[in-house]
Length: 239
Image (cartoon, rainbow, N blue to C red):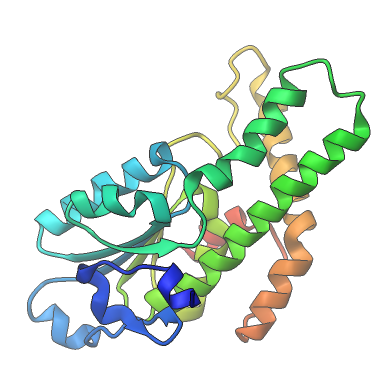
């Protein structure tokens, strides 16, 4: 089974296929503007609850006459296509992505097993491996799909690779925040707002430092500069 066969592409996106990865073959922007239509690439690598908000936006864009192609987990391709959107399938299904994190929360965070360090580290490594695979595949797939697009819209789980791809092609990036993930002082009302905001800001910084080496290596391959701040700050500064 080839990688291309493992990543089915819907008829609505069949013109994007070339070689092993879906390659966007879209007309240039100047020709499309005459028809007032735009090309939108959307990506949401997660469960159905994470995909549905993006699908709702995609349906409205299609209703307004734009073209939309969305990359999702392979088991959600049918759902996306039933909404009238073109689709490209990532190799992992949503259950494979969800299971390591579910086990982590179930067996440790919501239990009294935190003292079992060896088992905890094993689950953390499994979750990190799946997360790294999702990030890498998102980057590779969007590098193909976003060539010639007018805008890239991503779900909150995969902002980092999407932001890098949008920067590479110099196209606008929109992020669907269906949960309050940016640093704020309201998500836990019981805590003082300044403390909560600082804690969330620190979390963003720690996550950036943990992934910086991998992200910088990918950026260098694309001719982009190494990162100097968390991606949330870079997305804000880029506009």
